[in-house]
Length: 482
Image 1 (cartoon, helix red, strand yellow):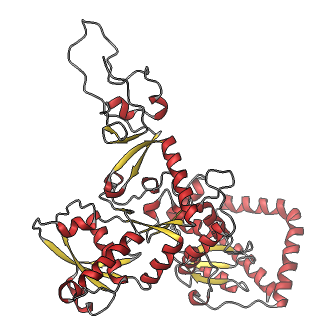
Image 2 (image 1 turned 180 degrees about the vertical axis):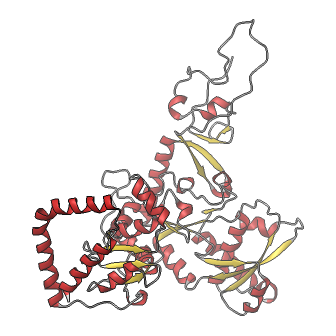
Image 3 (image 1 turned 60 degrees about the horizontal axis):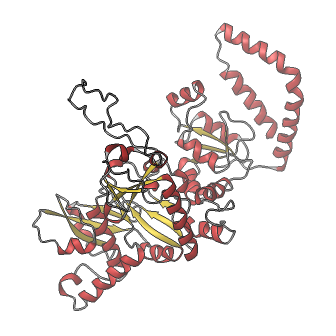
């Protein structure tokens, strides 16, 4: 007599995490809704039970991942499969725990975010720098689960020396952020590398040098202090590519760490593309303080209640209020002709990153320069759009770096450092004439619609390019302003 199927919501591999039962292929593929129906047909059972049927058994089908189940990565790289209801319940408990401590969660990348790391021997000449540290990494990495495992291993391995440069103000950033945020490391490097870097960062914060490992009388005390600091800052919240190898090198997932997809989490990473499903969570370090104040001081709501506010939505609101509503942008040299053609042909084409950055900050993106244009965001100066924009009073022709600075800092940064040409200043007379010209255009629109349509059709039939006429109209508009 077969035993009843296991209905528990948590699984580790082919075992139930609660009762230890070995799960069949059908039970692994079954969701929590299917698990409540023991009499449901199993894919392992043969539909034909006649004694004349072939005795050969079909090959077992590989279980398809059930969307009702969800992967959750724990400390040490262990991955659980949990039901959607259990994941939701676990996420609610985590949010209540964080809110009880008055904190949010910050997910930190390592390379190019907190540190820079190379194995180039030429970096030796900078060893006198206090913020430069070194450590050894084996060519064949061993799956260590803790920093203690690293120092206790006795297996001989071929190692290479790595040079670690800590980012400026890293010490103050981590110590201040840990007061308002629970820090988690999520890196595309191996687990061995992540543990080594985390320990090197903490050794730097407590003031331990590389030479202390050999000749300092206070070596043991410094090392113990560094280990305690690492536990206090990061605990066991370190996730590497070794832990989530099934996702691939260039993919990161908040759901692997936070089953609620990071409703109280922010991300600090130099790469936005690896967080394809959590772009609204990505911020710069300076924004953390403002985000925490907006969440707790303005009320983030109670976890699980209708008034609960998710961090990604708060970040969207903060970005949308950066630019005034009258900001109108046009891009020059930043969108290829092929991308422009796709945007014209397909209305459902995803927004280009540069367009999304501007619109998320509250600006309007247009395709032609007019008298209301406020910024020309260009790759280089001297283009036709730049020349037209420079002629408009008050229009700033800036590099794309200005827009990126505004997006990541969530501030309307000054354009002075990013100007590609001087701004044509506004005058009271030019502004007055611009308003009068706009009024004239509104009254002329109704009377010239038929004439314009006829002229445009005739030009198309004759095969003429109307770019020269557009230039003349634009020049006439500017003459009114001066």
